[in-house]
Image 1: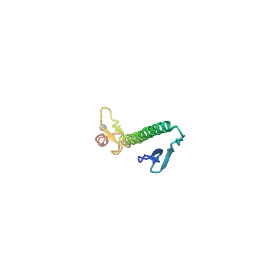
Image 2 (image 1 turned 90 degrees about the vertical axis):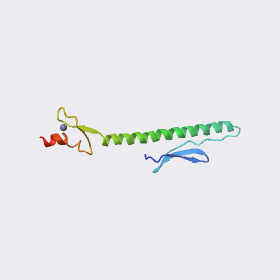
Image 3 (image 1 turned 180 degrees about the vertical axis):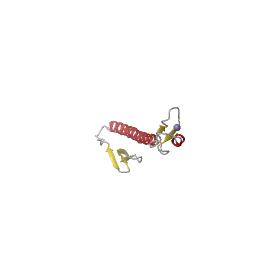
Image 4 (image 1 turned 60 degrees about the vertical axis):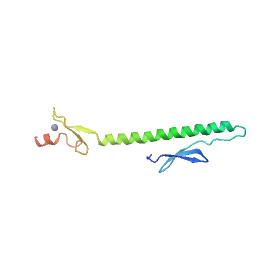
Length: 107
Ligand SMILES: [Zn+2]
């Protein structure tokens, strides 16, 4: 699921939700019966609300995953020397070296 989520409308009614790879799902068709215009309008209104809610939910999922991915790369690793509180990120070699630069040189 990518960030390019959007609601697709057909005849001014929510038709489905898709991202840039294709449709994720489709909304059930609203049937129109004679003498039930009020119900028909209400159902369309409900479907618009549902579509907006679902889109918001899906976008929040995408954002949560993005944040979790960021936390993974920005996870901090502590120097193993007791009393040393130097923290390094993965990019700074924190996941490879168990001690900070200073203690590495002092070994
Ligand atoms: Zn250290």
